[in-house]
Length: 148
Image (cartoon, rainbow, N blue to C red):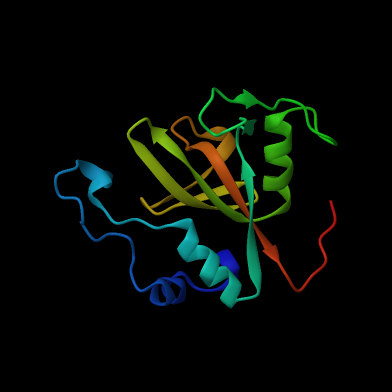
């Protein structure tokens, strides 16, 4: 339960459930409105939380156009995967990523389980058709002091 609030309340605050078809020329899930992380930032703020963005594959570029240099070493963590799962083990949040090259998708995460609006719930490590993580947004309670 993200934000310790019932799903129905979150949907009421958002003003939609993401299912509206707004791109009828597309196929399958691509037809639907879906959700924006920006909408969830506002909902999180309303309840005293913030979303901390952790890139699944961080990279740098001098201008955002040239081929990126992917960062592979980090202070305190050995590599991207260790860094990403460090944060995912500490915080519930949102995962944004791909089910296939055509489907960019967002799911809720709660320290080991994925809550997919498809709908289904699964354990990330044991599911073959899991979402490929592009960005993890850790849900940070602004009223408590978190330390790494």
